[in-house]
Length: 262
Image (cartoon, rainbow, N blue to C red; front, side, top):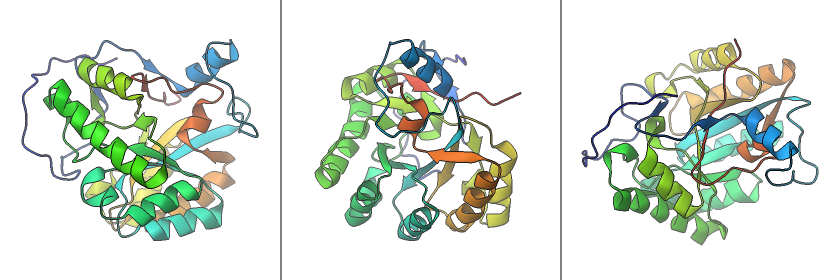
């Protein structure tokens, strides 16, 4: 686990994923991260919830989760067409401001078509720069906006840039949100080269992996069909994040992050 010291000052509003790089950081967070395998193992020992009927057993098949951050955007309907054609369900970490509020029908379609709808804050503030009330506002505002459209509040959230700490964990626990990080990223915010995005994902793919992409960048959605086809050819089964953890259940406040194979 990474531990660093972090001042809790209010930073300027962070432009949408304009940071130089995405990092997996637990800044001043005392909680240990939980792997998908650990979540499943604990449930198998009778510690957590039950697997959904007809769910995939990721202890027996090679699972991988496809996730998209910061949408919906103009390309999300086409992405949903691709996922429907490929018979793949994904997890969408939605941004509230100018996204959920701008594309309510797309949010409803994401939910209606069986994808997991999750929370990526309201305005993409770095949560470790905020106090508890500000973190609560960032998360609860998006919770309410999504629930108004889908009838259900998310149970998963992804902190911008993967930055979390004890305050973020406590507010997430209060709001019923588990924190979901990732292990595979194409850094698609830095390129419009769809072939490069595909190459980066395929090079990092591993069992129980969580892929981070963004459905708001021009190069990303065109890369998705090739990613899905090749990973299926390699024997992967695509699942949502809850399916990846099943029969475990994501615990509010906890931090989930896969470990890459050696």
